[in-house]
Image (cartoon, rainbow, N blue to C red; front, side):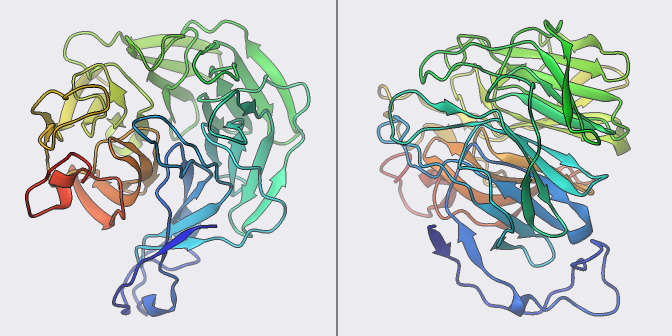
Length: 407
């Protein structure tokens, strides 16, 4: 395991209690007792919000840095927690056998049973050739930091970049890519349910109206009644055009409805964004992804009003400034940087932590990243919680002249 040490001044800080996640009023948290290691930069990582312990828990990902925009993946099986009371990371010493290393897996929170669920994903031994696709299902006990592989016979075929949410006693899986090839895609349109009490799969739909897609973003309503699916791509994913439509799947009836077709005053169509359900304001929050614009990777924040079915931009992020010199050759002023926004990215982890969206990691113009930012749902503004050790463009963190986009 590779670690980067973050040297900080340790001090006691007020915050949330370790056991309840509620604001502490009697005694401050002693942050000097915490670990301050950082996870390596990584993309294709996902996680959940562990409310009782006030932490974001993330698993897996790819820490390999690309060379001349060619991926050189190094797959991870690590489980990390980011504690919001002291803004510190901790690599969790897990019980049980952890899932094998993987990326592009699906992750969902089962709050009722206090566990993070992980399904599917891919791995390969070298940096070229076909991938091994996973079809296994794992549960991480958030109270005991223990992994368990769940029975998963007669379920969906192995896949990556799919949708997964928990609704009551059901784990719902939709779509994804089924090919092990590195340069071609076979997106799917099937819907499956896993009974979390009986540990059995059942197929709900062979051909969902939302169609064959992968690299989409997914969210679940607070009552578990609706799964929302936005964007993604078809067999031409990475080349576009991408999808910009938004769908709702009603779990009880098994019916789909299109909430927006992605035209007009809507976000640029994109792959690999993040989508969060904000029940307090009856809206969806969309951020990040790789879109059809000249900029590609984005750090825009959008809101979709579930009462009026309309999109609105909350934060514009970086602006496109100058064209690239050529393939994988960008000038230092490729973008006009918004210093109050996180680096543009896709395929990172995003969780709703009470009234704040926490984001970690992802793939950027400069490789992978390992920062944490919080988007306040009350103020509609970003705040950095933990800085990046790499992955930001030069113009974002350099006071001097930049000779290239990525140093």
